[in-house]
Image (cartoon, rainbow, N blue to C red):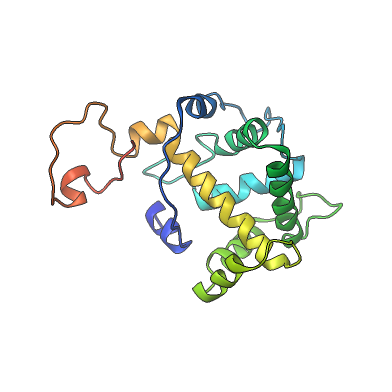
Length: 202
């Protein structure tokens, strides 16, 4: 299955955002090996869960690198730590707590979890029927509905992971269609004709 099919099956429907230069430089600075990564916002268990979920959403393929190859989890850790205020960080932590609860992470930590556990989680929430997803989205924000809070946490993680992935230098230059000096404007042509079927990098 290629990346296009993976994203389509997960029901990806987010807008495209352009990152500011400071955010882009932050993303490019996140180049660490997993054994050397010391999260500043995520806890140890949260970092494992975030990495595994992001890896399934944006996996490495024969045609393009995956989210882990361009250090998306490391970027998110720094981005949230440096740009979110206390209230936003608390809200994000609450969402992560629902993900850990859904995966039944307790005192055992995350060492016992298998890829299938994460697959099941993604299938249950991100591949749910549209009516159920709409119900989760419209639910009140008081945190009393575990399923709604879990869906919202996964949906938010997916959205920011895809945004971070598309913002990385490797993806912007070598995977998406990149033209640093745009030429003439051509209207009414297909995406295939314009970029070979690729989305624009910027």
